[in-house]
Image (cartoon, rainbow, N blue to C red; front, side, top):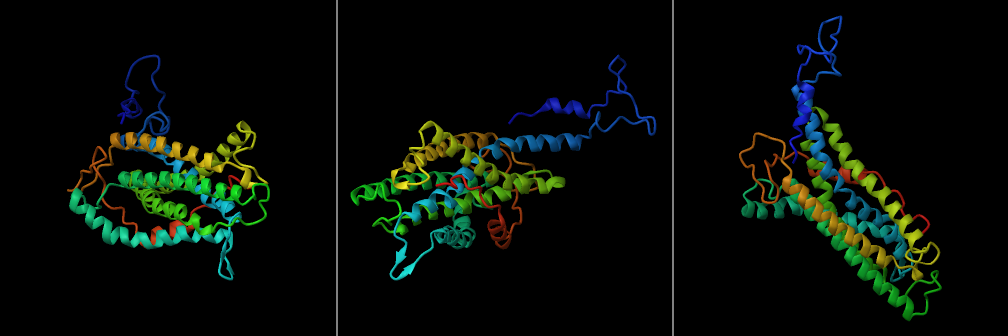
Length: 325
């Protein structure tokens, strides 16, 4: 990471320097204006925030992928057979499989994964926070690959059944085929979502904890807007052949999923580069070395499973990137 040493000039008192650019002192207390002279602590806090921005930028792609769970995923389910015996499962209810995955894996992560990883890495948390985010980004990539493959099968069923032009008739394909892509997003949530919360909360300056929460929440929000922008761009460049609002059976959202998969992989590589050069905020911790990240790994932030689950359910709803679909 760049040291940003040029920011140190903000903490240098130039009032004693003779010259035409000498600063004007305050008449009241004869001290330089706070807008012209900062404390060393303030300068270091600004540096810390700037160093977080590259990590923050590489979390947007995850927000784009997550936005599909409440838009395109639901649109897929609406064209499929949602019956389970005599019971009809509401299409939006399939998102419960993602939530159940999170509820089941969070305790397993702390009770099983962390102790096993600790034996390998010697690190108290098993893996560092950036490593945790990276694992989740990889699972989000897998979810898009899975979604693309399942969508290709759905289109084949629509073609074989002669229902390409009749989207109102449910396809002879169970909607439960969609479950794997929801489960993979749930796994990604356990790693990336929680990792982002811990990372940004821990790595911001102590006096700016609320900004850490803002970093985390805004990444999903920006991702939703990017998702909407991608849908608009692809619709205009492909003549709406990828995403038809009126007939998903004639759409090619499988190609859109492959596009998101490629974007996710490119973003993951960028994230790995950022994580490698990132230096953690210094803390008083004897176990300070991670395997993937360069620098000192921080101690645990103290977020309980209750806090994590509450923030998971209270996070902002995604903007509908395909409201017309």
